[in-house]
Picture 1 (tube, rainbow, N blue to C red):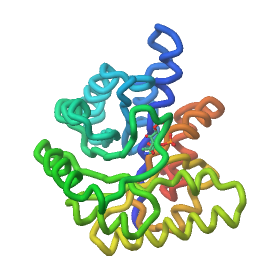
Picture 2 (picture 1 turned 90 degrees about the vertical axis):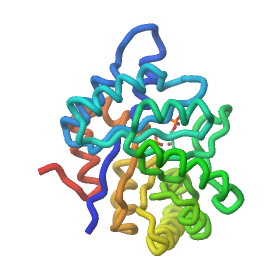
Picture 3 (picture 1 turned 45 degrees about the vertical axis):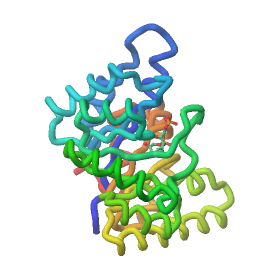
Amino acid sequence: MTTTKLSVNVNAIAQLRNRRDLPWPSVTGLSAIALEAGAYGITIHPRPDQRHIRRTDVFDLQKLLRGEWKDKEFNIEGYPTHEFLELCALAQPDQVTLVPDDPSQSTSDHGWDTQENASYLSRIIDQIHTFGARVSVFVDADAGMAEGAAKTGADRVEFYTGPYGHAVDPDVQDAELKKLAEAAEAARTAGLAVNAGHDLTLANMPKLKAAIPYLAEVSIGHALTADALIYGMAETIRLYREACGDPVR
Ligand SMILES: CC(=O)[C@@H](O)[C@H](O)COP(=O)(O)O
Ligand SMILES: NCC(=O)COP(=O)(O)O
């Protein structure tokens, strides 16, 4: 069975820090604790208004992930504006996840239409490949969108798990899980590795892993940060690795 790697999204830590003009909680400090405790990598989603991750955070994390923690993965998510692509070229992440977010969105709530945007995505993906990063395309749980992503030259898809994560009714949750599993199978058949993220939690992660055993990576931020307030960051990483089916030994 594939090991599902846990990437910690630190947006929420940055958002808490930004309440004051003070350097805590420290984005790099808590990232280092997460990595030390067994996180596979760090994810950020710098937004144009810098409401959480600031440009300086990107370079501070680059130092951490290209220095002491150079074996860990640096994943940068975002809409591919000229500024975003320039930032990625400078920050040299291992993976860029393309998300179709409008700057006014409060959070990500859908994936790309990979058929409508096929030539646009292909061009951007070629550009990102020139600086050596892997490219993952954020898509809804839809087989056609996963197949479309494969045709753009992407290396992976990241399935938007919001509808699964938000479901309260168990029948709705099961139906969303089924959609994710079917779309993941289409992605895999088309030759893509499968990532997932958005509103994943300790409670909903095990079922997702059981439905998609070959899940390569999950990026988790909001719930993981909330849990870190209760359990501390290191213990939280241990709990999430367990939920991902990859317990720390
Ligand atoms: C791409 C995605 O699913 C998001 O979860 C995103 O990274 C979160 O962004 P915010 O932290 O700005 O809500
Ligand atoms: N790509 C999804 C992500 O990074 C984390 O999303 P969330 O756990 O903050 O919803």
